[in-house]
Amino acid sequence: MTELKTQLHDDLNAAMKARDELTTATLRMALAAVTTEEVAGKQARQLSDDEVLRVLTREGKKRREAAEAFDAANRPELAQRERDEGAVLERYLPAQLSDAELTDLVAAAVAESGASGPQAMGAVMKLVQPRVAGRADGKRVSTEVRRQLG
Image 1 (cartoon, rainbow, N blue to C red):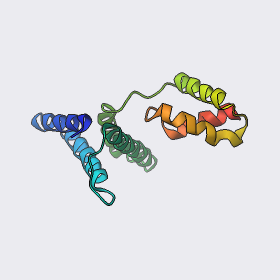
Image 2 (image 1 turned 90 degrees about the horizontal axis):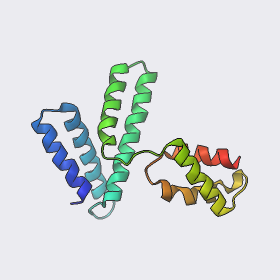
Image 3 (image 1 turned 90 degrees about the vertical axis):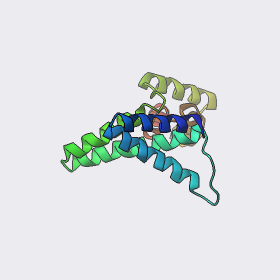
Image 4 (image 1 turned 135 degrees about the horizontal axis):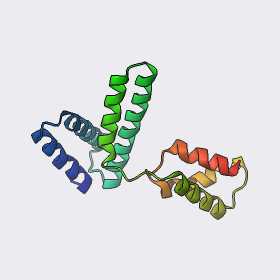
């Protein structure tokens, strides 16, 4: 079992003992998503820490989108629950890049690729995505690339 998955299991046990309903439910959901990813495909496999991190990032994004949807539907109590679950998941995710850090990474990628104009967006994104790796939402990255090429 990977280090991150072991941490999730240990934290789940601690939350159950402390009768922390929110953390227990959130970690169970996260571990279920990890297990689903492990058995997806033709053959079951163990996920690496990076793959587990990707699953947790995806689950966090689902929580943010659900909170926005509940806000739009005038259901603040459900939106708050989704935000609280997202906060639990954020404990396991790397810190998000600040706007300045993202701007610097994109500027370096633009300079490295020699790109100019919006048609070069794909080349720049190909360089930036591995460097960002879960520390910034793809929409934020593409907006910044478009702005700098634009």
